[in-house]
Image 1: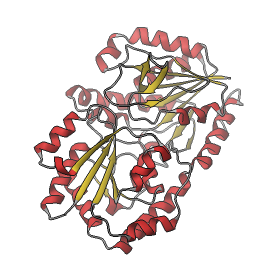
Image 2 (image 1 turned 90 degrees about the horizontal axis):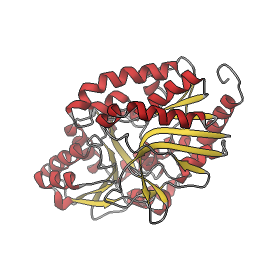
Image 3 (image 1 turned 30 degrees about the vertical axis):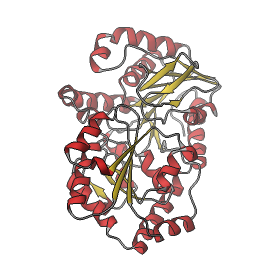
Image 4 (image 1 turned 180 degrees about the vertical axis):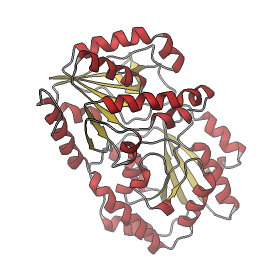
Length: 395
């Protein structure tokens, strides 16, 4: 059986090695495709084809995965100008597969869902974020103008979908309800959690620097880099010593560099670029942090926060998406509220080691319910039930 995965994600083709690369973020790698290949024999990935970006990218190519990318689908103007051509390309893909996995919010996904409904192709929508927030915090006036329309359109698409997978337990379900059959399954990839003893040892040691980490692509202006830098300035002005911020992400970070200079905190920030997933990069990075911050203005359920929790790290984050399902209210700030973010960080900075251990272990325990084996079993069961039904909703 052949399936299509459709989403507005950026991919880059490298002619030198013949591989496709994740063009933004690094989460669209072999691990993601293997989830679906456990159910389907072949997978066609539909996304946006973009030019090679300035820093090192994560390989997305995988056996039994074919990339059928659309070069004219990047940016609102291109999407509108090439709408007819893009829909024709989507129709060709959808006609050639047995099933569609449509990730939202995305314009390609919205149009693909309409094609599936008209052609009676079986499909499921994966609701991973809020369309309104994604456009409103895009950083442009055009984004703010079309945000309400995109929210309305996504509400309609999700509401009419026969099947839906939400990454949150309730937040996105409330904003984008589905009349069909739905299930909650996070899209985090978490193979294991660390031992409690490792957490106790880490937070019991005296360290020369208080290290704060953040992971977020520099392509988007809504990941919270601006808020973090303003918060860092405030923290330093309040007397915090030896505070170091480590930033991980793909894309051109020059605008963040300029921000750090503007606020006079460039000496406190390190740019680490893109790191490999799991134990080859991201986990060692998280293991060196005293605190992980996630001040994003828009989210579904933040995958990297769960990853940080699984490494026994203390976290503070914005209230975007379903983040409040993970953390206590005193570790949450309203999206955009950099001063509350700064005060939350200072609270952690001033804690005794025993209290840091308590918070870290709380996060570790919560993360255990997001281990991949459990989530994948749930995902396979749900998708298999859809495939095996000729009509109606999955049970």
